[in-house]
Image (cartoon, rainbow, N blue to C red; front, side):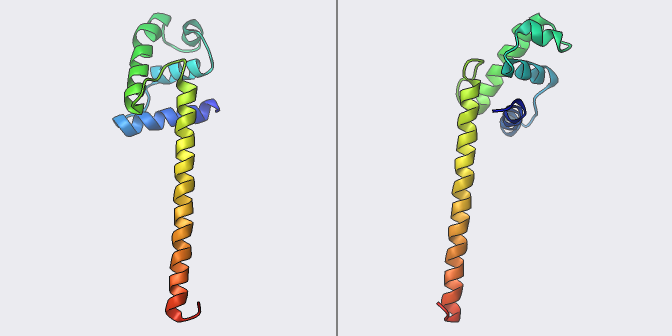
Length: 118
């Protein structure tokens, strides 16, 4: 999964559950984590200190995401969790599409019965 897709998914989950989008420090932390950067590397590429990222942003971010997802989220399992969410969303979309097509077919058959051409 690409960074942009992962970010959009995480932001959507947080927004849905909390009513707010990710804040700038959380964005910097998530993107750095996703890319496999160290705290020092994230700090160097952002305006946040290593200490702030480690002691404040990280624990709050994982707690927020875990609460929003309903299961523990961490640096070690985030990719698996997001893949599961994406698969679930995909299956749900396919199911809705299939149900919609079935409904349309049934409505078409019913319409043909009514006009006597079926």
